[in-house]
Image (cartoon, rainbow, N blue to C red; front, side, top):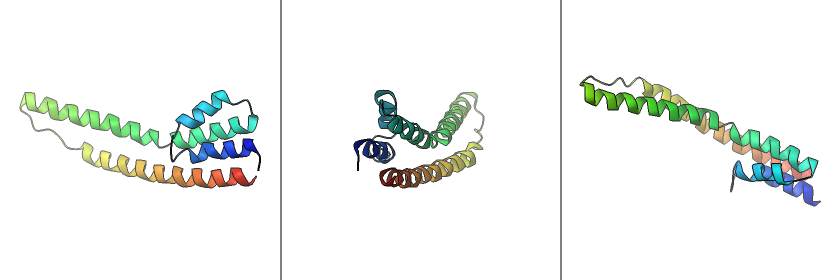
Length: 113
């Protein structure tokens, strides 16, 4: 087993200890084409769950703002964002689990090839 393959597999296994940060550092610091290619792939896989997480944060901010405004205006806040938040939380959990499995499989495959 040679060193670039081991480092390339660490890009994927970094989901356990430094997701996004480790592949990003290796993407810019490494001169080896194999390591850079695997760093790009690992970075994309590890950033995929950030999409529903960002949507969840925006939805939470909007819902909190509506509750805050309702306290000052005396109106009843609508809790229509609860279903959206639940769906986005479920999507985030599923995507994070899928990214974990995908990175583990890709890390093992990078060690073997």
